[in-house]
Image 1 (cartoon, rainbow, N blue to C red):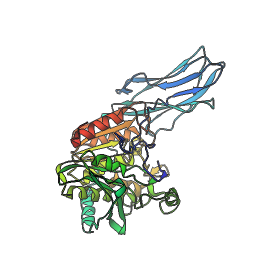
Image 2: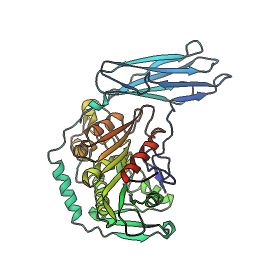
Image 3: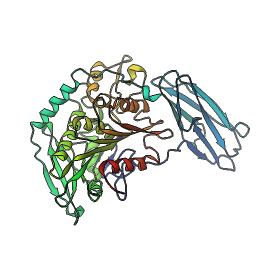
Length: 446
């Protein structure tokens, strides 16, 4: 998930919406990457893997029938191997052969419990990539793998109070190149805990009106933000703030971000994971809180509509921000990370960043304990904001079971966008649904 980049362009699954010029890290291409092409023989040959239902959803006791199918006429047999993975069970490789006389292979799997199964297909021909197909079973029944700590709310209340005691000391630098007759745009900096900084971009419509608000939170990587994200919404009559997840400068050279990735931010995803007080995510989550509090304190906010959105790690931060800032009225989270850290306790695959290591085949106890304070599943249990969430059934970074476990814990109105043939980059329908949701929640007219 980690990348070095100098802007938020749209090659990551979980960034921001591009709508009429919006920068989008929710780039979605159709993941019929389950279809592969090779030049074996004189005629183009394709193989595909798919479940037998378009929804790829089943109930306990039902069987999913996956198919590996061949189109075209190869001049030779096409052998390969496949595996089925359900939960944390190690996969077993089995062989298959496709040929002109046998153009399809059926693979059955019976669901014994709610969850997801992933088919991986490994063609022997080097011209064919690995194929994947997924299926789910009663995912709405998935429940937390660990109990919410008794002092969870007390801990986060104390951390909010800790940050409240530190003046924000916001510094706003006008960005004339992205300011116009209709909007004002700024590079903005706030103070955070332990002498750290929060950096981002803020844009607002000019004038003295009252406007809805949107906060962008971001995916995992080391990169610069792009002010085009906030200016696009300001032009639509929305006050918009976009914050970098790290204490780093925006707008720097590629080398700056590369050096951070090999220097002080090397392995940042798991820094301090054994202690809730030292976790790397403590500063990050408090950045979300300060950003949310800043927006709700702006005199131009209409005090009615406040949306937070992001994808992957930004999807996780959307949950966290909605918990820390109860004024948030809606959240949109694409393939959220930071979910169900303790999934291995109930034979599920935890979400990114795979927080907990194994010691003698058991979860490391201190990491397990600390992770509970940074798990979207626990934040979700008091979130009443309206929510739109997406999940990819073949996502191997943010496992579908982890996403559903967090989604199920939400107590407000919610809607899941299932993507049966998609991995972490999503599918072609998500952009349209996200746009509709955000525009509706912000009162934007198409």
